[in-house]
Image (cartoon, rainbow, N blue to C red; front, side, top):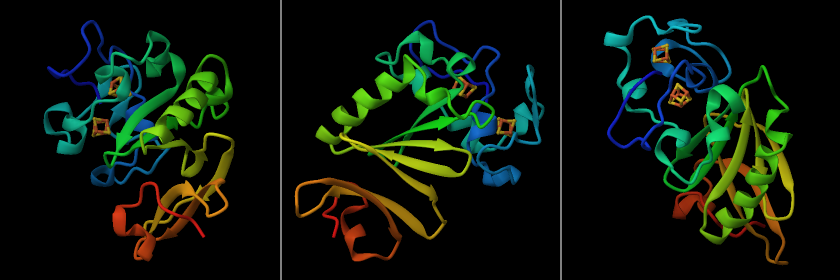
Length: 185
Ligand code: SF4
Ligand code: SF4
C-alpha cells in the first residue's frame, strides 16, 4: 500500500515495500491475512492505485508513523508490519514467508520489551503469522491459533495474579469494557 501522508516520520516512506498488501486482510479485494492482494505487483506496487480501497489509502504502518520505532523495523527488512489496532493493541504481523523472523534479534528482544511496557499501559501485544495469533504476556507467550470472526482476544490478570490470554465469543460479558485488560477466570 504505497502511500504518503503528512503524519509520517520525517525521512520515512514505503519505498519499494508492499508487505502490508500481503500480511493484512483486505476484504474489499478478497485477500486474507498472509496472501498477496491480487492487485499487488511485486516490486512495483498497487496496480489499481488510483482506485484502491479507502482502507488502503488510510493505512499507515507503525514504522511510518512512530518515531520510537527504530530503522531496522522497516517492513522490507524486518518482514514484520507493526499495526495499531482498536486503540489498545499492537499487532506484529509477520510475513508468512519468514515466519520465524519475529523470534530473531533484534526484533524479538524489542517485542518482548514492548510486551512488558504494553501491559503497564493496558495494551495488548500480539504476533500474527498468517491467520495464527500469539499473545505476548509480560512473563510468557500464549499461542491462540486462528481467531474466528466471532471471537475476540482478551488479556489480563487471573484471580491468582498470573497473566492470561484467551479467545472468547464476541458476546462474552467480559467484553463489556471493549476487550482489553479484563479479569480472566
Ligand atoms: S508495510 Fe508500511 S512501509 Fe510497507 S508498504 Fe505498508 S505502509 Fe508502507
Ligand atoms: S488494493 Fe492495492 S494498496 Fe490495497 S492491498 Fe491491494 S495492492 Fe495493496
